[in-house]
Length: 422
Image 1 (cartoon, helix red, strand yellow):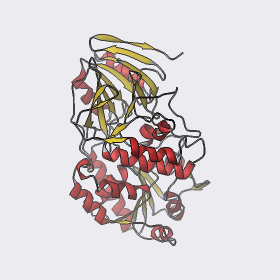
Image 2 (cartoon, helix red, strand yellow):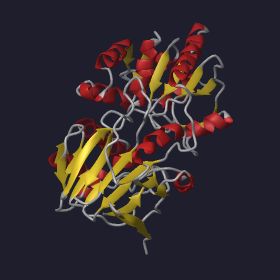
Image 3 (tube, rainbow, N blue to C red):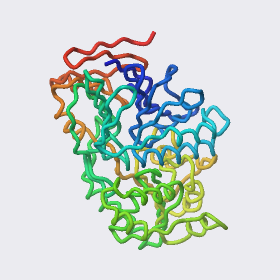
Image 4 (spheres, rainbow, N blue to C red):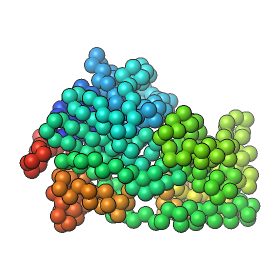
C-alpha cells in the first residue's frame, strides 16, 4: 500500500491522504490568513470522508471542478454538515482565494454523494471500505481501507470518552497500519462530570447575581453538547448561529446521536434566536445564557453579544473549546482584550474556559493504540506528531510521523519506507 500525505502531516488542519494514487481520504483546509490547502494536484477515482469539520472537508467541492467527478463516500450527517460548511464559506468568501470553489461545484456534491452507515462495507476505487463510529461529532468515522493485501485504519478525529451527545468509540477493527490522530497527545482531560458541574455552578451563580452568560461554542457538536448540559442542569438558554441549523439537521438523523430523546429535551429547553429587529441586543440585556457561534470569537452572532455584555464585571464569557493562537478567543483569555468585529475591546466581564473537548486525550490515544501493538502506527494531525511517535517507539511500537508531502510504502508483512516529496 502506498500512502501519500497531502495535508495533516505534523500539523492540525487541511487533512488529505491519498492511498494507492486513487483513493483520497478527506480534503480539508487550514484556516488562517491566508488559508492553506493540501499540497500537490490530485485527481482521485473516489473520495472517502471521515467527518464534517472544515479541516477535513473544507475544500471538498473543488474536486468537482473538471469533467472527472469522483464519487464521495460518507455518512449522512457528514454529507449534510459538509454542505452547511461549504455554503457558509461561499457566503463569507465566495469569489476570493479564501473559497476555492463555486456554487456550481457545491451543487455537484449532491450528484456524486454516496452515503453509508457504520459497519456497512462498500467498494471505492478498488478498495473495500468500512466506517466505524469514531465518537467525535455526529457521523464521524474511523475509516478501514482494505486493498486486498494491507488493511489501513485511518482513525481521523476520535474520542474514547462519553459525551452527552455521543458515546466514545469502542471500535477496534483488525488493521496492519493505523494512521492515528494526535491532537491532544500531551494533554489529560479532566473528569467530564466534574467539568459539567463546575460549568453549571458558575453559570447559575452569574444568573443569580443578575448577569448574562455568553457561551461561545463550535456549531457542530459543541453547541448541541452545551444545550444538553444546560438542560440536564436545569439552565434555561438561548441558541444562536450556525449551531441552530446543525441542531435541526441532527433531529433527522437520530441514529447518529447517543440519546435522541435527551437531545430533543435539550432542543425544547432552548429558545432559538431569529436575530430579527434587534433581538440579539435585547437578549444580551437579559438575565440569561446564550450559546452561540463562533467558538473562537472569530465571527458569528458572538460579534453582537460580546460588545453588549463586555463592560459589566457581573457578566461572564465561558469558552468551551480550544482557542487557537492568534484568534480573538485566545487573545481574550490571555490578555482580557480581544478584536471583536474589527475593534480591539477591553472586556470587564469574567472570562472562563472549560474543557469540553471531543478529542481523545493522551490516555485515550494510548488506550486506543494498545489494541494495535503489532501494527505499524503512523502519527498525524497534531502539533507534536514526531514527539508522540518517538514516545510510542520507546514503548515498543513501530511508529513514525511522516512529513508533509511524503509517501509511505507499506505491506502487511514488511516495514514501512518513507520517501519525501522532491
